Image 1 (tube, helix red, strand yellow):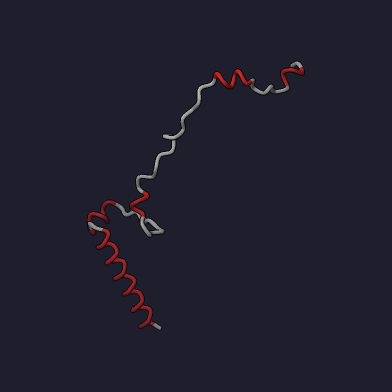
Image 2 (tube, one colour):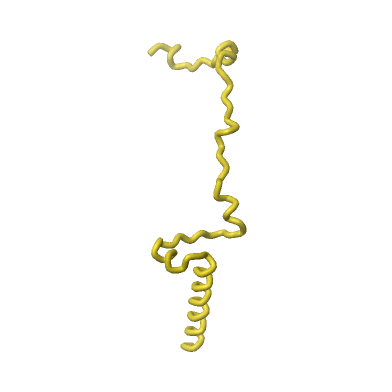
Length: 79
């Protein structure tokens, strides 16, 4: 390799003028699910068979709250 091959030449003004400008305005796609997130900080994924049993977010939350309530009662009665 010669010394000229090791140094990197800067592009000339003419070569830069020949290059077309790239439009990146459509490169960033918005998150289509961002609006669904709301104030929630966590997401939970249920298996299909569980979702089929409950059928709605409200019923899943109701069942989880009932389970927590029963666990709290159980721990108080043991102590």
